[in-house]
Length: 445
Ligand code: NDP
Image 1 (cartoon, helix red, strand yellow):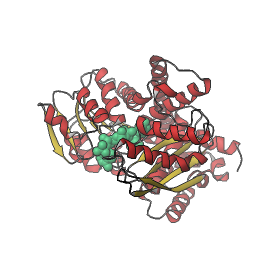
Image 2 (cartoon, rainbow, N blue to C red):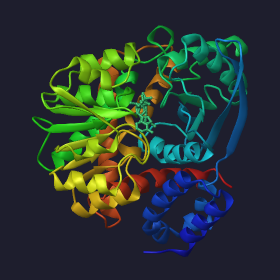
Image 3 (cartoon, protein in one colour):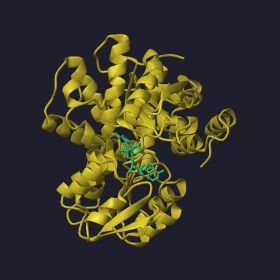
Image 4 (cartoon, helix red, strand yellow):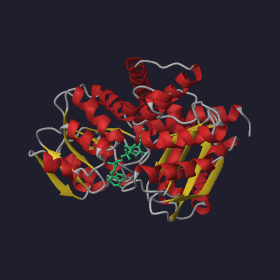
């Protein structure tokens, strides 16, 4: 199916932002699934919604100078893309990773618009980051870097303007250093960042939220197949924030998690991953996943990441990074009997892989729906900060669970309404888009 308005918009994006392949990939996926919506609702084209929604409202790029432990000057590049504020203040994580560039941050910011819309909370879309690698840096170096990053970013964010959170390379430690610097400069204590420590305005269950939410979403997909997590073999890529709590929730629902990874390689433990060991290695000691196999005799370590998808499993949860699961990996999963894939990471499956899953009619939950639990709980943290209240873990977890059920229902219904029943890629894009588009029309050009 093709549509001239969609084709022209894609062409403009590619001409205006040459070489930004991840950004092109994300925009192409969303726009192609919106074709039936654009054809049915002529007002979206008349209001120029597509050409407006693909262009960020604001892009800020800045220098981050800092001193390492030897007293040498280091310089990184930071950025914040304030993508769309139709539904609320810009909201989206900050990523610290050497691969960060404008293509990656724009793709993430663009996805974030629709993800945040799906949560049903009042949040616009944005994303930020820096090409800084926290790996191997001392706590003091990370602190000096975060302070320098915030020394520029503070001018552009506020609790009612733009509320960043964590992402790859940005956890509780980094959020704490950035919050401290924001407060020092602005002399304001409010919810300008989410993912904060519990002692100073963080929300219970935020740390667990993305991983738990991904499993709640996947559970809804399994229920539609008259199944559940009980006794399922689950493979999870990554061993960071999302992966660890996806593993925890899957195990608590009776699944056996048999493999996890990091950017160096993966461990396969047929007896079931001992999550306490992974948590200590990754959250406390900041070591490599290979150390797991050195400690746990039932596990084998394999260097390199993509082989993890050749391990036979019932459910796969890619929770590491973009484009980590390609067409070959998808074919291996399907051939080995996998029935459900839910993306904890953002855009971990390549377009070829998504096609394999959809053609094979296995359940597939795209990231913007399946991993929306993190930002949803960030939204709940913002609510608690505004009220100066802290809800209990169970209260937040129950709200998160209900939000994930609602997102699944919204995506499923939108897919059916637009004649692609069961295609949650289309469903999530359509359900997320329609709300934003209508709000943009209401707010004028
Ligand atoms: P973390 O930094 O906590 O963990 C990332 C994990 O992915 C690590 O195990 C890391 O290994 C691995 N990884 C990173 N880069 C690569 C790579 N190029 N190849 C293979 N593995 C890699 O990040 P999060 O868990 O927070 O984020 C993971 C994914 O989930 C990202 O796509 C993020 O955008 C997405 N996400 C996160 C949310 C959150 O609340 N944190 C919310 C929604 C989505 P290593 O340690 O070796 O680098």
